[in-house]
Length: 591
Image 1 (cartoon, one colour):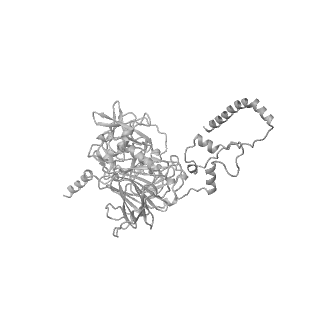
Image 2 (cartoon, one colour):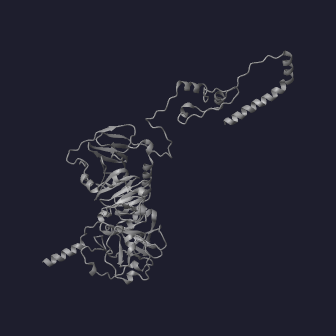
Image 3 (cartoon, one colour):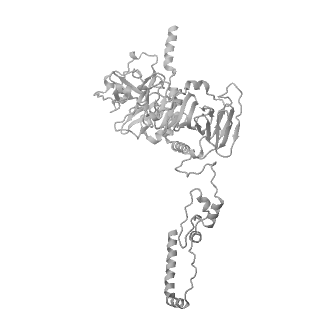
């Protein structure tokens, strides 16, 4: 009887899905990165460079320095983005629930969670919970003051004084030990405009969703923009990447194996390299090339990287597995996988050679030191390792070092490194102080006290932690005086001068017969001084200073009459064109 119990227990290790860290690592990844974004994980106490497609889990922290931005994608289709000078901690990841802590900076949440899901964003003075589809911006200043801007949907915001609901088109401002303030949204700034454009881009195409299982449809954008779907008689519809890095490309080549949560996980540097390397299998299709075969519906399981291994003291080799081939891993990773956690791998022999081993350039081989330190070391292998060496059961038994924890081995500039106040934040302490609360009626900050309604002051004009000038693009909108700044009113003397003769200063009057140009009005006073268009008649009336006629000089009558008879006609003929020519030149100068 005891013998049968022992055998049954051993069989259960294979038939029942064993616990693995895949449930945590499959939930969150970096989907877009700009600048020197840095990451701190529970596996290491050091801050290191972050890269695209890096899986994130509970306890990880992100820092976005000046000039950087990062986007996180959740497995329910939600996107969370951070602007420059922002720090985010991942407190907990559960089934249909996510909890983050924004200690400083700006975050934008495009929440597309499933039914009965929740996203909780905590800040130093508040806790914000999102239950339905919403677009929300959260800004946290250095003193912890929080601004919650709701562009779509609604959120529930809580402080020490109580809780309130914030609907679309409103901004809530929360400070420590002060009344909350509710106001309309301020003008659109560059950060909001970039997020809206990103949202539109991610949802404008979705034709790949017809070929993907329901669990992976939220990742359709990567397939739409980086490849095409072709039909294969053996596997059905397969996805073929059209953006490759070289002619000798093969799956699992452009990236790095990183030690994450007790296993070597493939981190691809290709923008589309999340789903095709952690779900499904790869096959080489004749006349087409490498194609990714999606998992069948009902059998969607995340994996560290579905490959076969060969490991020697000199080099490490791997090859992508084809559909139906067995993957040996430390955990349960779906059909056609074996959990080797409780198996003596030294006594297990793999007899069948993998199909993709015979594909030209299908096997990737690197030096042992390159695998550990991420630095290229020349290696020459004449024969295929999978046809000569013993195939390993599971990952290579290489002890992780500091460099194997880094998704990319490079130095971060000193100016981009995070400040000390951000380093002092402890995620474990925050987890104890800020529990994840899914129920709407329950409290996060005061769980033992009855829920109170937040005292809120309402305003008709937009308010914000940053002024309107700081949140507006100066390259797209002209600068205007702040609302608190009053335009200087002209004095009585200035108004009199402008009304009588605009542009002429009273201290230096115009001389006789002299053209006096008007002074250019100041930029801020132009709208007040010139209220109507300057016509030709008004220009002649206001800007031309005619010469005063000299007093007539009495001349002898005989001389006067003689000169009048001799020169009257020529003088009139000459004066008329001179006068017209003079006016014509002024008019031409005015135009």
